[in-house]
Length: 317
Image (tube, rainbow, N blue to C red):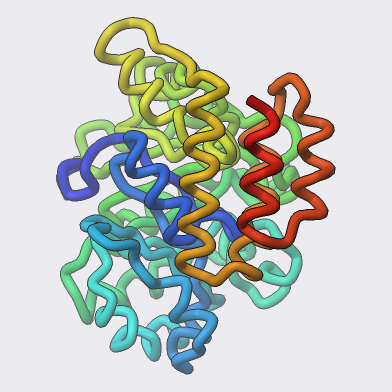
């Protein structure tokens, strides 16, 4: 798979509860080359679950779309394939990194790091049905005593994965501590000349962080996760840094303008009640660090309509 398949090296990572079609639309508009769905249950997709299908809706004009599946084995993936292919994913990604207990206890997410052979079976199951590229997002290992990311990556690559994304923490770390930057270099060196796309994720909060992953570690690209929440401008900034050697930060006015656009999209796609409720966490992140934001956060927390949220945001300018 060529990097042109996904549009370029900067991707909005899958974030449960965040990377819906509204956030993906905002991120793409600000420079994200493509975006990944929230993680989709293979079992839910196989059963035609309405909530599952809602996660797979594209925003108008979303030409590239990576769909991420999670499941404990190849069985639900096999049963989900007919429905999955109906959504015409650009890439099919397998989640082997989610550390959340309710996912892990089913044997899915980062629990697959303890069962490397299973990822091979899952990938082969997909490859038997389609030539759509397959990607895997994984961790260093289950814990510090079982670091096996290179072995895991080898099995995925041998089974046919064309793209590998390492979140350089163990499952035991969750999102705490710091990502192991040395591991990115090890992955890059291990697969040098293979043609497999290699991406990094973890502690990418600035354009400089992204540049370091690519320049110092030799990766193909970066998945921005928490660093993009409330800051979708990071995609534009990173591209500016690469092209010009510097970048401009968004003004308060632009932050509020984009936040309002995001809010209106949420309401348009999900209705006023759900859209406003789900938008609160995004708005809190958008206004973080802006003078007077503490007062506005309180107002947003109590707002339940588009008008109330718009009014609260307008007072920060």
